[in-house]
Length: 224
Figure 1 (cartoon, helix red, strand yellow):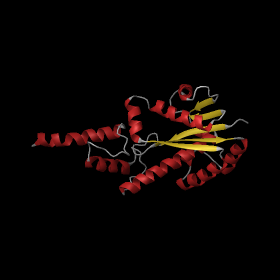
Figure 2 (spheres, helix red, strand yellow):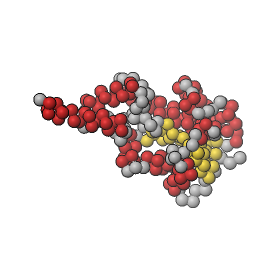
Figure 3 (cartoon, one colour):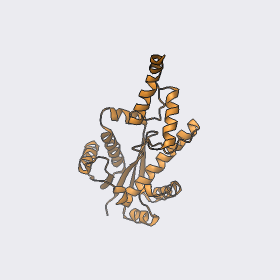
Figure 4 (tube, helix red, strand yellow):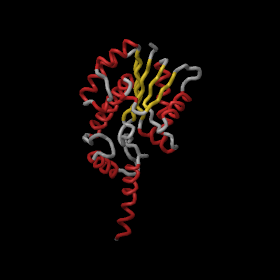
């Protein structure tokens, strides 16, 4: 069996914190061990179980890699219309470092084949790797499930660090979370001209909040 890598992300839709992208490299024995560990899609696991499995994954993998993409880098990519391109570039760098013969990737693009092609375009010249990108690959391939778990644990740790820094439990960090929205309103209101580095300013939720906050003084003046 060839050396196989799985790559997945976590926190792509999050409005607070980094995007985590992880890769896991295994051989036949490692793949068997992943199955024995009970590795499956990270979204179906509790945080405690993900942390437990992450330790096991790191033990049985030939190699693994986690990259955290900061919010400002995400914002720059969104401004250029290239979040998928940015993620493909990060995935390509991970694959180059792990050196698998086959890489299974959870596709971020609506067109999975196009995403695989984009990843390949960023890989080192002459690299002979078969890249297979599929939607919901984390639910199909244990090695991608393993990458999903490492990415999710890394993102959870990053969110925990931000909460400790600000001293507020703002929930999940996703724009659909009421606690996250309440925290965003509060922290953006403090200085709407200079949002915190951990906030993704390119997200519509943040843009709308900032627009509202920045026009409030003028609105109040007009109402006098």
